[in-house]
Length: 168
Image (cartoon, rainbow, N blue to C red; front, side, top):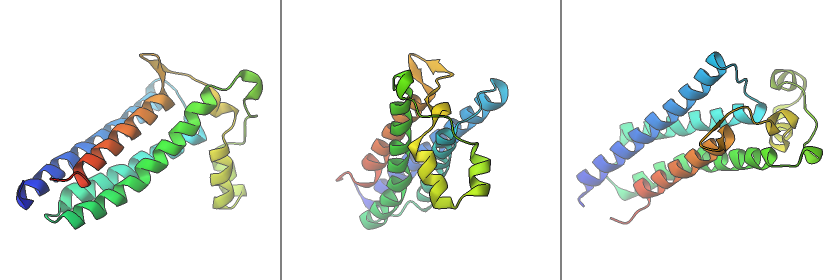
């Protein structure tokens, strides 16, 4: 495959990744507004990871470098929020599968933590998880929303790998 065709394939895949991230955030906002499924702190962090990943996909899709090095650099940039999302969603799925007696106590709302604590402490507290993050309010095909988020982060990571790191 020549450089022009490789850049075109990269562009299409990264723009598909952007559309997927935008659709996932759109669904999360829809479920919040219309089904009143208020996000827990881990859900909010997953939304942020999808937004940053979507931005990386958009930038990569708009730039679509012809050279392998440029595509790999953009792939690494996109991998950072994708892998962070896998970690956050994985932690969230783990919390949803804990026995009720092992679920951590509910913490204060994210807004309060942001006002009362330094940012690093807020991140640590959120990633530790709390009781509201263990509650499953919605399922589709037997998977909870955090499980769907984890699946999408894994699929999008695969798309990044296929687009940016596959030998041509």
